[in-house]
Amino acid sequence: MTLEATREGGTVRFPFDNSYARLPDRFRARLDPTPVAAPRLLRLNTALAERLGLDPAALASPEGVAILAGNRVPEGAEPIAAAYAGHQFGGFSPQLGDGRAILLGEVVAPDGARFDIQLKGSGRTPFSRSGDGRAAVGPVLREYLVSEAMAALGVPTTRALAAVSTGQAVMRETPLPGAVLTRVASSHIRVGTFQFFAARRDVEALRVLADHAIARHYPEAAEAPSPARALLEGVVARQAALVGQWMLIGFIHGVMNTDNTSVSGETIDYGPCAFMDAYDASTVFSSIDHGGRYAYGSQPGIMQWNLARLAEALLPLLAEDEDAAVAVAQEVLAGYAPAFEAAYLGGLRAKIGLPGDRAGDHALAGDLLKAMAENGADFTLTFRRLCRAAEDEAGDAAVRALFTDPAAYDAWALRWRERLAEAGGDPTARAAAMHAVNPAVIPRNHLVEAALESAVQRDDLAPFEALLASVTRPFEDQPGADVAPGAPEQPYMTFCGT
Image (tube, rainbow, N blue to C red; front, side, top):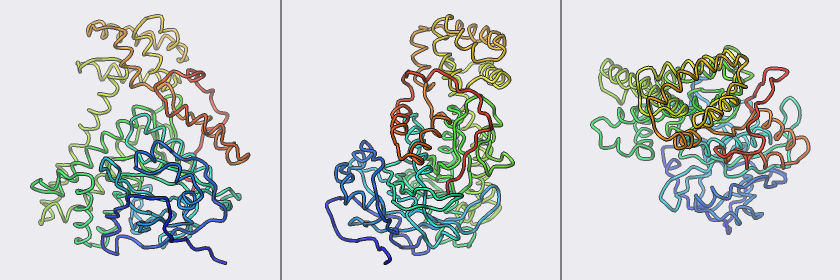
């Protein structure tokens, strides 16, 4: 017998107001999630539920778990799979879309903020192509863990509301336990969403989508002389700042396709993502990124490329004359590089305790990174230990220990201390400010893998829970956090999880 999602009312209430579902039919396909055999709650984000105005106890009830698994459609939901296109590793696909995710609807939180509630791994859709529309426990828990760590680090990101196991296997290289992630985002509008309609020369839909994105994310743009230009400017500014934040914490997205670039400026789609250990700008973790397109050091340039694709899609809205529209797009895109540099270099100055912006600061920060790369220094621990060294030279020993040639640090530290002396100020206050921007804890790759293995192979979530508790307090000193992992026997690899 084929299971069908129940559409009865119940005690779990969502304050739905589904604006995207009210857009024209060509924006999405309407369908219910595909029910699963035996849903079981793995993790519920109680704090996030309360932020959304939801009742955590109701969500953890059998009825709530049925909703989170896709077995029951809550009252007020209008489930849809969104249409979008995208450049994937540089090649354009005119139709991608939600192949294993269904947007239940949008909730309006008590403070008036609007959020998408999406089930990821909820079954096949018209956009699934050859996929099964499902997700496995490992990738679901990875996204839960890393997205919540990013939120705690202060990085704009989608969030994880819940993870539910399905009681069914999904077939990948081997059978794996299945799961559904409930993802929360300020929206799921992507650069690829605009590309979908641009590829079809559907200017009317482009205009509708732009108006929707403006109303939802950039309301001030509606009053601008050219709302479409103001929208592009807003996305450029947010993405420049976002990639700057990624670079400052050693985060590598791994699959920066245009369909994974959110118009809202949030980090989205945690597939082959990871954090660097030893600093190396060429670091690539993704098993499918054979050419290193999305390497750590390439991320700023790739984001600029993605934004250029958004500008191309918006050309019909930027000006009636194509040459004039291209000129507008080029002018807006020219603002990306200085915006990124300001975010990134300003963040680097804060990480090494430099107040203001003086000549030579950029070179000083860059020379530290160069020395770190040449000496295998751990990215996170170098900056964290510098906090202590900024307060007291006795802290130098712990930093020096991270460098294969400690003299490389010594040479740099002499110049750094001269700059700190020129700046003056209270060393204790400086160290405290540095502690606030240099995390002590990140989702270390070996710990993530150990937690996922325990969950998948032994159905033991204790390591996952312990790691989640740790990475969501990233700026606190914690036992065992001040130890760099050893070099792996083989290069660390991550996978898309599809």
